Image (cartoon, rainbow, N blue to C red):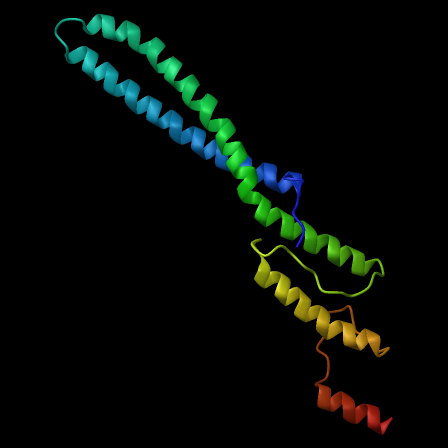
Length: 164
């Protein structure tokens, strides 16, 4: 199977998921900063000598560590998020394009995705449905696009066809 070179296959979906992951990670990092800052303040207040100096130094220290943490984590989370969503967005995009091509009158063929992509079960189900539709189309039979109506059982339909 061919290797995808474009990492942002379905940009809106992937960026939304990456944004959620990044926001969650950044929130966790900032929560840790708050806990560390609170601990430093308690420590500074409990030290009999030098507590004031620790309080003065702690603000700059916490700010510096926060910027370093977010500066490293955010790009890392974005890169890992894009790589992780690549195996989800790619197959979803591929199946969507495949169905659009069939809807526009293209040949009914099997949809293929890469071996290690997600949604392989969905792709197999899609191919099974296409196998059911393709033989009917090949025989010149019409199949209803209205999926809400019950169709007669195959045996009943065969009896009606013979009677006609």
